[in-house]
Image (cartoon, rainbow, N blue to C red; front, side, top):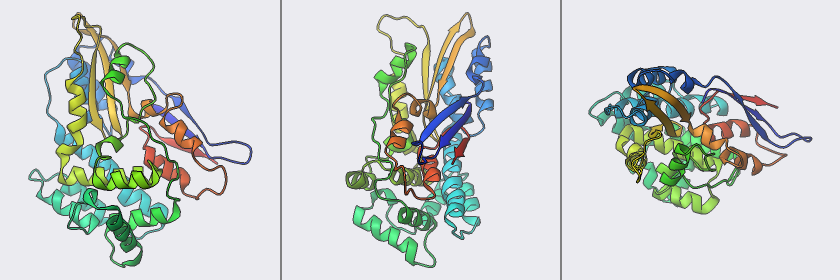
Length: 337
């Protein structure tokens, strides 16, 4: 998705609102190209998730597989690390050594994975993976982020964020896209309201399971999921792609043997990325891209439901920033007050 998301904060005379200012449809520039050329173009057009777009295009265009999980993992790591180790400390007025961000990004380049595992432990200060904590232990860990002078970076950020956000703020729960939803896209129908974010990759962990039972899928829970995604990118990157690869295996199987187009899916930093392509006579005849934000902006979709669940008055000052961090749009976002 190209363009800009405009988020209007609630005032006395209006509720929360969001609208997309559409930009150029970059996928249409692939029409007329050979499949290889189309894949190269799509990978170069999207600076953050270029590897994910290349992976989705590979499948949609029926090209030989390019195994690029390391590149996709680094894109995912960069997105979450910038938000949790740079943007949020600045929002919260925390003094966090910038070396944490540099060390985290550097650890993602270690092919052995040893530096990544060590960095994941350093970011949490825990011997047990954060995703495996029981709710009571998680609460104690958050408390340490407020009370310890040398708190672990993620403990400090999430603890201060928790302190300013009511527990169930922005609670919205939708199912993740499944194979039937993806096939509907291939039939050129409106995608249903689904949660295409990274949440589905972590909601079966003990920590998120208990947090969701306590407060629902709140905005804070979604930011915790981003922390788990960052840690998985460092210590267990294969976990990030399990669900998407299972979806990919179910695609493009048509009982009648017809091929009107092919779908490709990939795990991007912001969630599930879907490409839909048609190729005729060795040239791309049609191409569409559905980003995670595209899923979330459908009528009565995730973003709309989150906005409807937010208070109209007495909102935390950082609530717009929290909403953006939790939904993590694929486009620049402008906030109107």
